[in-house]
Image 1 (cartoon, helix red, strand yellow):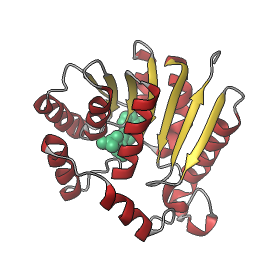
Image 2 (cartoon, rainbow, N blue to C red):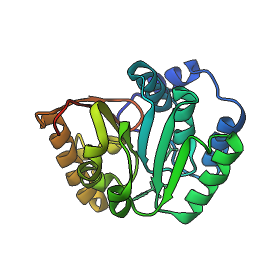
Image 3 (cartoon, helix red, strand yellow):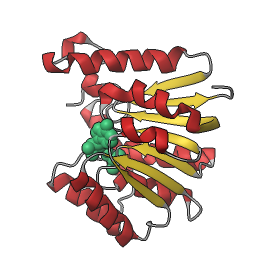
Image 4 (cartoon, rainbow, N blue to C red):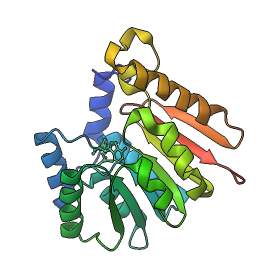
Length: 217
Ligand code: SAM
């Protein structure tokens, strides 16, 4: 139970989505079997729509896992698309490299191995979109380290921002998650109230925030 979306509604929406094929389907099956957290189907579809409507051509991703979302993004962007994705776990990074090569996206996706807190400063270039999907307690730190790499009129998508309902209500908070919850609330407050950012929080998956950046940050 996600505490965010009614299960029957979620199932209905998922049933409606076309099924993936080939390597992407294979990765979904691997992730399920091995408990690797990847973006949920309705979040993946939402990302595809955002990428296509905003004509995004470059994405900085924090949290590669096994490369699933990076491939979904490339498929949506087409052959001109480029993703730079950071992952701190060596095992995940190496599976992602193999998956991406096998899927033929190795020219589009650059994988960086290391902690995003250390690597973000060294990332070169600028991006149309930033996707935050790692270490929920560090979103604000990550954002502040890379917001200057986001192009004006660019978009930040932050996944898992409602964290099983814990962010919205103390009723759901588990004691050991208190620090993450406090930090995520602070992050949501920042992106919701910053004068140059416009944010909408959507109750799909585990909660997704979309943030638009106007010029001058
Ligand atoms: N975006 C992926 C997808 O949908 O296919 C899923 C990413 S998974 C939810 C989060 C990943 O972030 C994990 O593989 C974890 O090891 C990685 N991670 C956590 N903290 C990190 C950090 N500080 N720097 C880089 N990667 C980190």
